[in-house]
Amino acid sequence: MIAPIIHHPFNFALGPLKLTGFGIAMMAAFGVAHWVAQNVLEQRGEDPEIMNDVTFAALVGTILGAKLYFAILEHRFSALFSRSGFVYWGGFMGAVLLCALVIRWRKKSFLRVADGAAVGIAAGYAIGRTGCWAVGDDYGRVWNGPLAVAFP
Image (tube, rainbow, N blue to C red; front, top):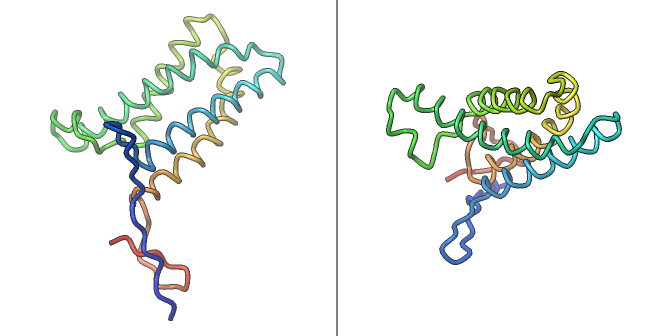
C-alpha cells in the first residue's frame, strides 16, 4: 500500500496580513464569478456594469449571512466574532437577498440578471471549494486508497 499524501493547511503571511488557502480561494472565486457573469450578461445584451454592484452585494451578503447562520446553528451570539463558521447555505441566502435588493434598487429584472450571474456563480463555487480543501476542511469520509490524503 502506498503511504497517504500528507496535507498541511496552506497559510501565508505578508507582513501583518495573514492569508489562508480559503481566503485566497474566496478572493479568486468572487473575481472569476464577477468576470464570467459580466461576460455572459454582455453576450446576452444586458448591462454588464450592474455586476459591480451585485458582486459587492454578494460579498457582503455572503459574509453576513454565513456568520449569522453559523451563530444560529451554534446558539451563541459570540460565534459571530470567531474566525470560523462561514456556513455555505447562510452565505448563499444572504447573498441572494442582498443581490435581489440591489437589482431591484437598480430597476433591473432579477431573473435576467440572476440567469446571467448563475454561470459566474458556478465557476466561483468550483474555485471556492478548493479553499476548503486547502485549509483541511470539508474533506469527506475516510478512504485508504492509493491517492488517499491524510489530514493530521
